[in-house]
Amino acid sequence: MKRLVNAIGMTQARSLLEGRMVDFDAMVLWTILELRWPRAAAAITADPGLIDAEGQGPETLQAAWRDPQFQKIAGELDEVQVRALIGTADEDDDGEDAGSAA
Image (cartoon, rainbow, N blue to C red; front, side, top):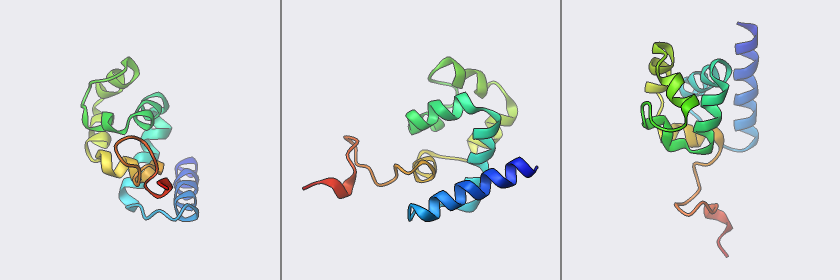
């Protein structure tokens, strides 16, 4: 429990320092997902759209989706929330930061 509370605090601090507003419930769910299924979280971080794919994607993600607990947690998250949590919410479709266009 202490590990979870510390991880949530670190995620919350990082979001605040980066100036991102993140839903607290989504933050808790994502933190649990990262701690319990780190490979699946890494795959989702690389391609946030996979959170909505329900069992599609790399084998590590497919394996995680077979776990009912993962299904319950991941089912509560969507791509928009994941992008906000990992800090890619303000990127446009071609992967460039919206503020970097000159």
